Amino acid sequence: MTSRVLAAGTAAVLLLGGLGYAVADAYDVVPGVLTVRPAPTPPPPFPDPPGAQDPTTPPDDVLPALDESAPLPDRDALAAALAPLLADPALGPDVSASVVDVRTGEPLLASDAGTPREPASTVKLFTAAAAIDRLGGRRTLTTTVVPGASEEVVLVGSGDVLLGAGPGDLDAVRGRAGLADLAADTAAALAAQGRTSTAVRVDDSLFADDRMGPGWTRLDVDLGFVAPITSIAVDAGRTTDEPYAPRVADPALAAGAAFAEQLRAAGVTVVGDVTRGTAPPDAPVLAAVQSAPVTEIAGYLLRASDNTVAEAVARLVALDAGLPATFAGSARAVTETVAGLGVDVTGVTLTDGSGLSDGASVPAAALTDLLVTAAGDTHEHLRPVLTALPVAGLSGTLLDRFSGDAAAGALGTARAKTGSLRGVTTLAGTVPSADGRLLAFAVLADDVPATEPARRAVDAVVAALAGCGCR
Image (cartoon, rainbow, N blue to C red):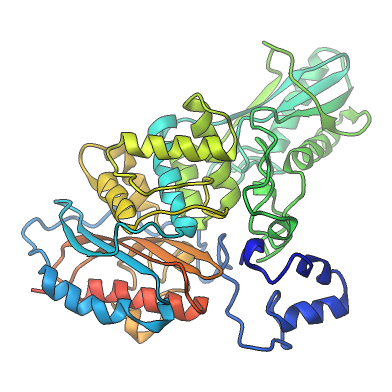
């Protein structure tokens, strides 16, 4: 549910009071019992609430072995099996689908596969692949503290927006680098200089100041879909782990405040308010912490579908490509990097790195081309793009999917990236056929009447692929 498709600009104002909430409820801007029609569950572009297991933890790190002797599905039989499912009214009038054999790259189904459609969060497949390819999967992001002007230190952002407020956790992606560790090392460095007090500045100048994407409003932040994009943040700007909890309005200053609190805990007196500042060129490093490797960050953003992390990663891709760290720069850098891998990007128009912004369009064929490329021998370094994908019914944003009888055939075997915006339901990933042939698929529907029925319809398409020998 994004702000650009909510009822009206005044809806955000209506949310402020009890009566306003009731009005917003009645017109499906917020959930509640006063709705004038059945409202679908808001389609979150960030993690669904955790169930039996952590939705960001992959249950398996390897793909199933490909059976090279397994027969290919017959194109006509496959088309006949999927045609009635793709015509389900729940998917609306604008539906595209592509199915490709992973081993050979042979197209098996192309139903308007070259028609660009709104991709929603399947854009993150492009972002993750571009990050691993251009930045390198083993690269980490180093958040540093350097001396600033007299009696101050500067916290310098490097693009790590998953900092932990406390000690770092070496077993996690969220919070791998901890501000408590950074503050303790900073306090020790200050003590070695005979200092017990300091002012704190935050340098987030690595990224440009366009912090809100095309079509975003404050309501997107207040509902927790995304935080304004800065080059440093604690836990991607989350305030809690509750679904639809607001994210902070200024993640960089919030990170600075959290760092200052940890400095105080380490015995340092923090003077004045935390404000923005610029690190002096070639300043010596007082303390530093490292993020998880890029491959792990990319895997996290795919499983959790975290828009804030995706945008930060896309900006790092832009900087590495010599482009501005803006929404436009990151969209161009991701597209060009993916094209450089050999993926056909004809018809691909990105406007950000997450799929949340207005104006993006992607053909289904481009998504399956990327998936096949990631599975191929030429680009083995991209294999984590596939292994990190949520597993149907088991992890990530697919934790609560594929639960009905019609979709049970793909339960535990399909791996895919979800995409959900109001009126848009997409899914792209891989699934083994009944004969053991691994297939790449993408289904994009960008004029759906309601989200939940559309999701079930897409799941049924994938389940039919899983159950289809189609010979």
